[in-house]
Image (cartoon, rainbow, N blue to C red; front, side, top):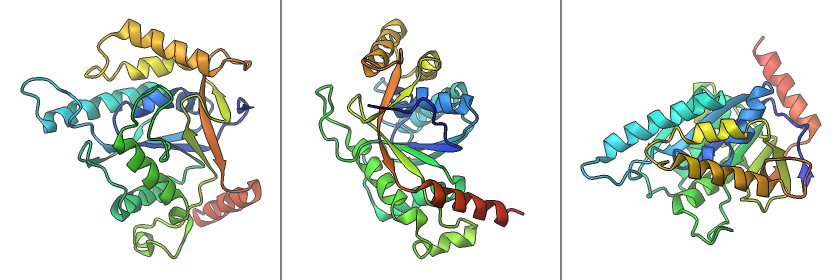
Length: 255
């Protein structure tokens, strides 16, 4: 695997379906980059409103609980910019409406890196079925990144909101240990776990989940110089030259 221990983007946006998806998957990487100076933002397409199966629980109350847990988890990782789309849980579809919402957030935040799920994964390496919301959201993100967010003649109405075309430099696709790149999270594995256990409605056995996360991160790092890692398939979309020119345009426009 390629080692990315020296790379820190200027900005990163993680876009996923549910509260806790980021913490299970990539919070160690986000926390590491934030610690090293990156701007960071989270986008959650649903608020996990069917994710608390308790007597008397309503979807509205569940969404409220899980949004609060998400904000607490984000704060642990050093992330203050959190957006909820509030689509119905377990009912997400990769529509043009959803793609446009994602494009709006990308153009607003202008991330260098997007972290997303894998839209092609139906069966996970752990022998499970990948949630349909995960696949739908990942597909919408990929479609929003290319070509939509960087195409000035698409969604031109967003320009009325001051949201102009933005080309993402790299996409980090969450790879469940099967990717081509590792991020060293040895210094942020405890932060990842602390963020994850903020999801109190989902995490009932903290010692066990802690052991599980440590073991998985150690397994990801196997045969590398790292103690703990998260793995990704990295898609390089824009060259250094194109990215630097884009940053220069932003700088000039803000003067």
